[in-house]
Every structure is written in C-alpha cells, then in structure tokens.
Length: 375
Image (cartoon, rainbow, N blue to C red; front, top):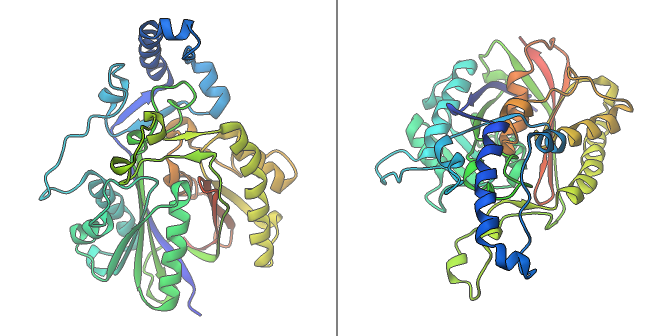
C-alpha cells in the first residue's frame, strides 16, 4: 500500500487583529447599556444582570491574548458586536472561497504543485456560509482544479475528519493530489454579547496538500501513519442556526443561533476522552507516547491542552512538546491544530513522530499520527 504524505501547508491570517483590552472595552460599553435598558426587568427578577468582562478573566479562562478577524470595526462596535461583511454578488468569489484560495496557493507552492494538478478538495469548517452550491466546488473552479470537491462540517474537528477523507481517497485511488482546506470565519457565529463567550474565537484559514509517496515532489514531507476518528453525542457545545429556523413554530432566543457551550462540563468530559483516544491510537500502531516528539493539539483552551498532554506524558508538557498558538490566534475552530502544525514543525528531524489532534462539538475527536519523512 502506498504511503500517504502531507506535502504542503498554507495559512491565511486576516489583516485585522483584536487585543483582549479592545474586546473588553467594547463589551463593557455594550453591557452597561444593556443593564441600564433592562434595569426594571432585572429588578423584578425576570432577567439577570450581565457580568462585565475583564482581561484577567480571559487569560485565566482560556490563555487567549489576541485574535484575528475578517472585520474588526463591526466586532468592536458596541451597537453591533458582529463583523461587517458586504454582500457579494453571485458572480463574485465568496469570502470563504477567497480565503481558501490564498491558503491553498501557499500549500501548493510548498508541495511544488499547481491548482490544475489537484483532483480532490475537502472543505471542512464549523460554519459554511451557504447550503449550496458547495463552497469547495467554487474553490475548485477558482484554482483550476479537476476531479471532485465537497463541504463537510464536524465543528472543531472538521480539519481532521477532512484529512482522513483525503487519506482514504488517496489510498483508494479516487484522488491523486488532494487538498484539505478549513476557512473558519468564527466571528460570524461567535456570541460577542456575553462575557462567557466574547473572547473565545478568531478567524483564519488553513490548507493541507496530500499525495501518495510515489507522486510527491516536495522537499519536506510528513507521512500519515494512521488516522482515527470518534464521535459521541453531547449538547454541551451547540449552535442551532440552520435553514429550518424560518419554518419553526415558536420563538427561539437569539443566543441559540450562535455558539454556546457549558464550558465546565466540556472540560470535564472532553479531556479524558481525548487523552484515551490519542493513547489508544498510538497503541493501535504499535507506538508509545514516549515515541512522540510533538503534540499539535486543538487550540481551544490552554488548560485543556495542558491537562490532555499531562495525562498522556505523566508529567507537565513543555511548550516545545505541545506548542500553543492561542495567545496570538485564539480558538480558530478546526484550523487551530493545523496552524500549530504549520508554525511549529521546522525544528523536527526526519523520523520524528508527532500527533495532530482536534476535539470539539459532537463530541468529535480526530487524530493523525505523523512521521517526518523528508526535509
């Protein structure tokens, strides 16, 4: 059986960045106004007074210090608290497709490939901007690719689930040069109105090129030793926005149509699930945790990453063993672990083993065991 290699990665980072201080200032103004407007209902006990944010709370709760967004002005406007996204015509490239093209071009340059050589595109994201036609097919046309393309959504695990789909297609012979792309515009579905959520997410787009070993031309490659996916239903991370909303009888609270979670329960549930998943995946391949040089974990929360790595290693992980990009990028949903891989791999040697792992709503967990093959 042919070995499957990652031959290139790309990253689109939006131009707009927001610090914790800016975010706190914006939400504080919005909350002060909301509490004043609803003072009577709060006094009667019909509503709860909203808590004010703080930079200290953000750091303690998440490890996030900054995030990039596609539009800073709208997010920081206390009267709006969401990005401004000008409506594009049907003859214009969509915003997600535009992000994808930039990230894919970087990844193809690393792989020594052109868009015309791509014959499969797997677009995975926690929120995709329309039902159909698939954004992946729009991207396929934009880069001049052949073959097939489709969208998929497994929330924060969309990248690893897409990567397994690409690996399977290459092994089955239905694709020769596959691209996985993850355009995460999380600012469009984040809840910027509440202290518990406003700081969590940032925007980014990642791309990965995969090929069979005999076809690869890149100077740096990573062999995919194995992939493993698992899901277990939970309502603790949820977003009910969908095409049936307009047909539903009854009135939803607007906060049901954006991201929400029971953070404490997610922490308690997911950390052991992920540690067991990675440990069993390594064992299935005849490998031990001691063989792993680096863990590129889903970038959702600093404490979660530290607990998961500690459970696996039996000790506190070093920043070198489990690098974190939360301080700069925040949680970019499915793109996070790929950003960590993209930015923190140059110092690894040929033969080094590493784990790329995501986890999120579903619950969903996906892992890839990688070995540096050349470079």
